[in-house]
Length: 596
Image (cartoon, rainbow, N blue to C red):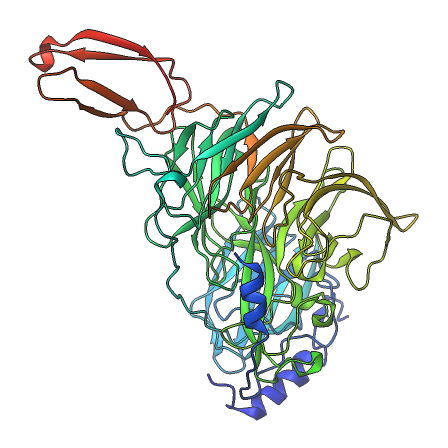
């Protein structure tokens, strides 16, 4: 549907949705990148007027009055996908019924009510998609004990902004940036140079996902000495990010994102789960017709997954100085029920945070370069803070504490409208990866660029005192040799012994610090490589595949045998067997493991 169609319908949609047509009736009747992207966003552009995308009132609750349900899409919102489910969270599926869903253009939608495996809700899955830019009315009933309540609410679907897939340029191949192995010539991982390695550093291996270099992209594990342990080279323009160890059903698993990274600086892909034999045991997809974004992914103890989504939609930006025929990238996060793939909850930044809170410029935004006003990059369900979720938004320079049940923002930390005073050194700019530490403080990777706001990037720990309305810097950690300014990406990981591990994002460095700031470990990849995040974890694995072997030597001379086993962590030595046939093999040599 183009932007000039059916103005009478759009007027009706604004009357219904913008006028606050939420109805809840009881039975009683009552979520490399940097400079190039930012420059492109400033290019001049004009286009026909786009629909509005901002609701008439921001930061509404997703809880339906008079019921136990929290719902998504958010009532009275304009940003839902035409492929959305209707998520109804807060009552067993058996207590939800009489669901009726009608589109103002597409008419009545049949479908099925599918229960969440956690037993606390269900999604209504329509039998066919909605139309873009139409109003959807949802009605139903929910029982609580002996009481039954009727409910009704409205939302509107957005016009999706198409994202193109230009080819990704690779740098000229450089032998010295990559490792090469006789036994596994297809791997070609980056070289990791270790410059500092203290005995006080934490045990564990280095987990990264290099891309943008001359070799293949892919998730990778290094030993602390810089030797390769495991690399999964991806084909073509597929990239990976965020490789880490998580727990699923009480067992350690490897998880990472992989997919396509468009020039606009987000991800369009899926979340991968492998076991300790590197066998694929799960793939988590974003719901509601979206692709999973690269920025964050967490497996929870309830067998759900939290993931980010970037959702470019058409939007009239004239109210904030942008084009009437513009587009905006809405930041989204979802909670996915892993066994069923259903969307339990979906949160959109446009429904809660004003476009004018951004430090990005909407002038010149276009279909190709949507106004990336928010740019969510981390989600953290706070331990010890029941029902609270902490998110970080790069382009508003702010952290937000959300009520996990209602989706409403309870506290803004930083940015244009901070509700706490950030004392000297506590303020951030274009930050990533806000995570609550066990003592209640918050670690943040403070990029400080692009454009450059701080001289260098840093990892910081802040202490929040909401009752005093203050945010205090506890520690900061900078990379002094060389000084680093990471225009994008980066993370901070709190280790079990109190040390902090820092991935420097677009600067290909990995560092570990003691709580007092002493550098205990430092390493870097050569050349043009980057890694969105980096972690340190203990890891033990036995690959399901076989070792790789190569042998050769001069004619008539000795034979050299090369062996590797991609991903194996327990090899101590290799033995070589030889013979005239498989049945007559006997050991002829043995050597301790040396490198990959």
